[in-house]
Amino acid sequence: MGAADTPKVNQENPLPAEAKEMLQSIASKWSDVTDSTALQVIRLKGAMTNEVYQIKWPTKAGEMSRKVLVRIYGDGVGVFFNREDEIRTFESMSKHGQGPRLLGRFSTGRIEEFIRARTLSASDLRDPDISALIAAKLREFHYLDMPGAKTITLWDRLRDWLITAQRLARPDHVNEFSLNALGDEISELEKKLSSNQLVGFCHNDLQYGNIMIDEQTMSITIIDYEYSSYNPVAFDIANHFCEMAADYHSETPHLLDYNKYPGLEERQRFLRIYLSSSGCQPKDSEVEQLLEEVEKYTLATHLFWGIWGIISDRVNDIEFDYVEYGRQRFQQYRRTKPKLLGT
Image (cartoon, rainbow, N blue to C red; front, side):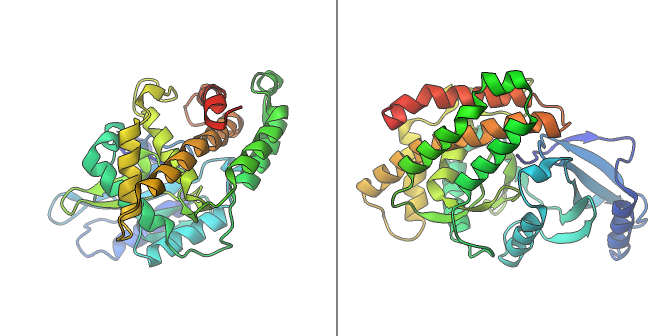
């Protein structure tokens, strides 16, 4: 899960020495920065995997106008993804003209270009105009030619995460969430969802905090690729729809409201725009087929983030009720599975 930009000014500088040195070196090359050591550090709230900071410098014009982003990698999150793969994805995205440029790397994090765009809010996902832009951008993202094997990672990742969850979880959580029975659930889903699917390069975490909009050009940028990999595109779209139930900037960021899950017409509109952004108008039957696949893949997203929540509770010290978040994903999985799979 990525960052969203509600700033919180941090009086103490939390950055490691090597990051500060790198930042000063970057700023010293900018002729309009008066003092490369006079950096202001602002922590961005809403991140659940890394700690993210906006860095500002005063310029000769007298305004804090030079900015970069510093990402400090979360402790223990290496259980979720391979950091080297993620950095390779990040660099490849830059080459494709997607996302921010990489400005520097240090042992516990990296420095990124600051994108002059607004991070979306929870309500933006429901705006028909913005949603249409996301649908078109997501299809472009799915068709990027990225390094690595173009094979589905979802099921192996779920199994790997489950093994980690079984090892790390408290005994009462192992029992409550039936973690020892989830392997069979994953196998059943894989069997029922694995026919004739379209595979693309998926973001796998398309919540509002990972989408930015330039309000002058109305262009969308998708950021934060920690969880990105090749997967069924229906899984990525299902995940995006499920994220509409979340508001990570509320008083209770871990609580989900599935009444906010998009209605049938909203989902159909998104999928029609997604399919038509290739230049061809899809048939109604194509929209309906993708819609059916997406609905079934919501089950996989609930298991994905449910297991993630149980592990995160044990490895991450960011202030967030990971267990309750995971509990709600598992509850929604059990609530919707009989209808979606007819079991």
